[in-house]
Length: 301
Image (cartoon, rainbow, N blue to C red):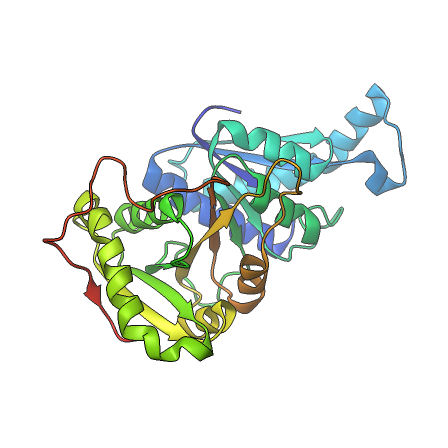
């Protein structure tokens, strides 16, 4: 794994192809390469041990999946550098291990591969929760879509928690693709009367981020209801949704929280997960103190 590449887990499904297409667009914008990987484990073939010969056989069996993904990437953009390989190892652990040298890891959402269901369910969730870099989950693209580039970035935050890395990723993606950013927070129905106050608080919190990313056009909104309901009503298939995952302590399993899991079922657009530290602090860029002169542009939600 070369430092700074985008890592893509593939399994031969339509969702896997969508992940490759999204990653190609992202790699072109970032001026970096792609590393396409298929992970297979001997137990998926009813085998609990693997000799060297068997491992070589498994790699040969799975190699066409990687070759097809590489061919797709090169067809979409010949200028993007792409390489690939097959790893005989537990998919979740292998992708997480490789993510330590990647700038981004991308997997398909609800993919069912031709050889195995390697990126289904628990594996994809484990990668999104435990990757050492931001992770993106991509579902099938709309039939009439002509590009995988987002037309808008949506960031969902909960004001009681820190979202420094989440906002850093959201602003960075909006700047990279030259698209607007909408930052939204969901209010419980019992607190619907606090929308104006929450909106002002959110706008104030975004001031230092706007100073750091002056070219990004930002709107803010609050919506009443669960986060999943809010995002389902707000997001389109052409958006990129950015969510923050707050890691658990060392004695607790690193699993996606209910908010992210619900959002993954509620929206159809790509979802990027930024990993916040367990003991998160202020949600502002370190190099920019909070300034009171600027303001976000609030938008009624």
